[in-house]
Length: 231
Image 1 (cartoon, rainbow, N blue to C red):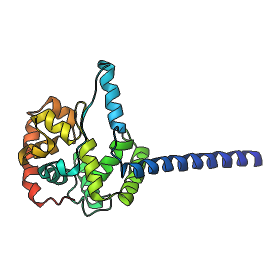
Image 2: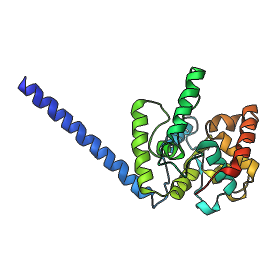
Image 3: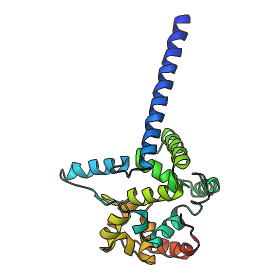
Image 4: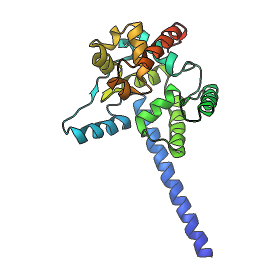
């Protein structure tokens, strides 16, 4: 019995050590990307692998651009549609989470998530699209790391450059060129609102660009944009 207790304690200590190493690894990357621009994210790696299964020489469409070279319309549109309290909260919008939970209860299924821009960024940088309690826990820890070490402007700059916007399309510059053949700096208000409306289901809207639901979302986002506060 004593030998079993010792073995269990050693296993628990080993697991704790592994967890600590993993957290330090995550924190190291968070610190690094606070100063240097990510070239590839976990989401990008996953999508590229999927594309190359069908087409071995497939490549992603992505091009990093500085914060100041991205249309203010797009910045306002994304905050209006994805995270209205982005400049105010510490990474989690508890009121938004409660609203999403109530909405899901009414619908009887998950139709709203309540994730903030920082949470979405954490997921894109390190995690997979799969949903689980473990993954949500990882997302929460990474969100806290990012909020503790990055400015809101840096969080938003990285977010704008790495989020998925279509089949193999990542970042504002690639999205602007993919859908409108212009740069991210040239996006007008309606174009920006439409791109923001695509974010929850980018690959679906890439295939269904005239979906009626997208037009309605664009109108709602346009109406909210004037009151959106950007970093």
